[in-house]
Length: 199
Length: 199
Image: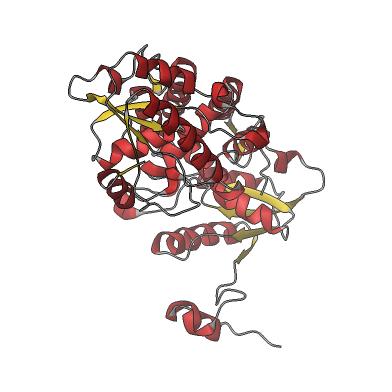
């Protein structure tokens, strides 16, 4: 799927590095730019460059941010006594988009993984414990993946935060809302039976 | 699907202008860039900008080109006595990728469309007739979409070229009637070039 133009081939090569974008989609994207005005491409390139070079990490919660402190940390309407602990900034976006959570966040930037040599101090756990020491946090919601690394990290953080008298909760696990029971995986189904709730 | 970062939102807004890229895919692309190094984004932006600003139109066939003459027109292995007449540079890429055609091209840059006020001299038909006058063209393959505009353009060009003693052929109707050329699969397109019929 190469063209006679090296300029286009180079653009396609870079565009096809995006997840889920194959050679054919990348070519369609490149040709789309050629059909639009030059200023459209200039604006796109500028937006991507500005985003990549100017983005910062919030010095309180380590979420990606346009300023020193992120929009969540500076928002007066957010409940700062509740902190949701997540692995990645993607998780912050996902949780914010549910519209069901009105507290602060803490982005770990990874999970404890002894196999990969990642210990508690390699991710933002010491910073979380420091935040806890200020006495501002009443509840910590551990929203980590249900994997070996997620469970290990959850266990470690829960233990440390409980020692500081902080109420620790985790996301409820079970079958997905709106999903067919027969397609649910056995682990989730087993867990949803074990953790069944009163009607 | 907006985030707390205006920098990201701006990038997502531009990325979602690509055909087939929605808000969610655009966000995934933006976050992908944030996880890669700054130089990756710089290289991507540069490749898009360079492509858009440095691309030229071949002065012989009006295909997109890196130089004054495109790679097809300068290639010594291509048969210059056969010219494939197409609407768009996308069609050149599609036909080149079949590997079944070894001649030159002529990109019209549009089709005759009385409804839209587009006449023969609004597209590169006079330039095609000039090329024919040099006596270098023996066969012209009209590879236009099977639409009203495509058929009108085909009829007009065939008439003019036949007057100059040029053998005029058209793609065999292996391509679906009413479909756009750039979306035809390579097998059908290859077949329609091999089985081209006299007009």
